[in-house]
Length: 383
Ligand SMILES: Cc1cc2nc3c(=O)[nH]c(=O)nc-3n(C[C@H](O)[C@H](O)[C@H](O)COP(=O)(O)OP(=O)(O)OC[C@H]3O[C@@H](n4cnc5c(N)ncnc54)[C@H](O)[C@@H]3O)c2cc1C
View 1 (cartoon, rainbow, N blue to C red):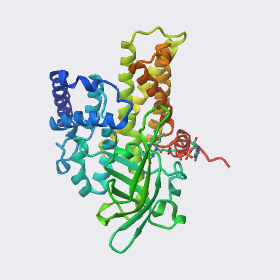
View 2 (spheres, rainbow, N blue to C red):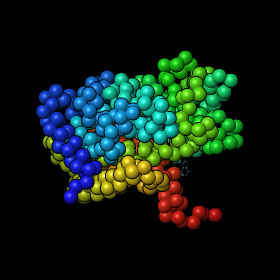
View 3 (cartoon, rainbow, N blue to C red):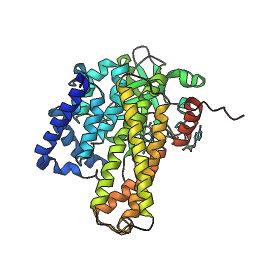
């Protein structure tokens, strides 16, 4: 017998599939990979986001108080999976909705109520400002500082590698409110209006030719107390919560993306170089493990549990599955992958380059291995 939750899951799946089928003609433009220009891609994807939100699909799994339609948060993952299974690409800004949205709901519900709905419909783009030129893996050494002037905070500093920074409207930013020596005890999370006076961005051209990342400069940006996320000096807890979603929910999104890219590759006319069969088997295994692990984490997060360092396992698997997967596709589509000049070949090469970044974004894989050895396997530390 089905319980209420699985009945709702089945009903939404069936209705969503039917909607995608009946709108196939209108949606055909959203079956292709994002373009090389980030702003052009986002403008295009905002139309898709607006359609999905208006029809309700991307609002399931979010509370009604924040503009959602209610239901178990796991439905959000289900909708993404169905989207990929039907041959569509997830609009890029929805990645951060899945990562920052739960964090706002948990630590600053008033901000979630004000902003979540606009982010789901594509009217507002979000970004995450953690990394700095001298603080990536060692986030506790970040130097961007927030000073309370008696009525509001004044934030100054320099962030880097901010995905979508130059097209974003809001940023969840970590800044130092304690002394430099306070390390992770003196950090606070803020909600920044990217159109505020004192905010400047500079796009970074990545190896794949895309301007997806940014430098972010803050010069005495004023932020009211109500835009503090969580407790003052409680930014580390907020960052840890967010990173669980970044490593868990993002891994789930990317396994869907990988599946779609494989299907696309099989639809191309290809020759395949020697040894491709074994590579296909390795890729399939890496993908299955990623899918199973990230699904388990997604369900735990949806149930309000704390998967903790388990998300580091998903992050390591993601990095392997992306690298092995695109190396395999490169081998299958040889020599088109490397030599052809048409848009499809360019998109393949962009993807191959991007998969090299999977071992870095969301926390370097070497650091995740340390976390797993320490907190999951309980291995003794080296002297
Ligand atoms: C595509 C992409 C998108 C990104 N988007 C964002 C974003 O939106 N917001 C944001 O804030 N950041 C973002 N980042 C930045 C990312 O989080 C950092 O690059 C990452 O945390 C690593 O930090 P770092 O670059 O400073 O490298 P470092 O910390 O300098 O590390 C360099 C290398 O040193 C090694 N290393 C470092 N410390 C250890 C250790 N303790 N144990 C073992 N090895 C170690 C690892 O091999 C690591 O790869 C993005 C990065 C990429 C590539």
